[in-house]
Image (cartoon, rainbow, N blue to C red):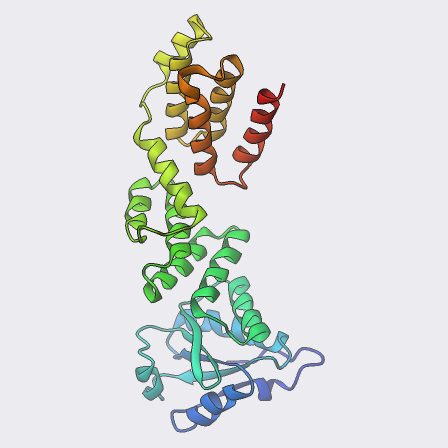
Length: 299
């Protein structure tokens, strides 16, 4: 595989990227990682995704300018350490720090995630593998890649099946895609005392969906005849929320609060808070809704 040209100011590529064998693995990886983090790329010549991942790894390692090294292992010629590390599919990537594996992933990732993986290792020496995967998921979401985030969450849950952040993140992705059944299945993995904003948000969204009427025409007709029919407006808001139209549902509830905030023991306000929780505290639904609610309550 052709190496990408060295970045200005970095050590020569031959010092940062090399092939190794089972015979030299201890020296090139285990011992070397006691001074500089080492990324190990298990690959094979017949592996298409390996050819995709390899150049991205090399580019990111060279850009790190010596803060991390890359060692490549052809598993057809050197199956020993791949077997010891239980490599079941390739490409498989492991990060070694202080003589032991601390992080890794399997499969070809987008270049942005590969760079983030290398940069994180170069910055802090690897850290917790779970935290690294959660960071990777967050970065994927910021880049508009929910599939990459789902993969990172799933890998985190393989390592720690009751990790609240991974459970909440994966359930949130399913909920936002409209797959409430899968979202509920993921939530069942959470321990009873799990604390995570995404878990709370998905639970709220599932509760909204469970109580949502399937049709809105009846309630819309009742409101057209009597805008002060708060029961109809509440049911309309539930139907809208169950269909994922949280902003529209919030507006209906805010209108009900504006007309009679104390109706039915503040039922509209309580439903509105559930919608804010389902949308997430930093969502536009919650931010705009809270501003409008404050304007109504303090007018």
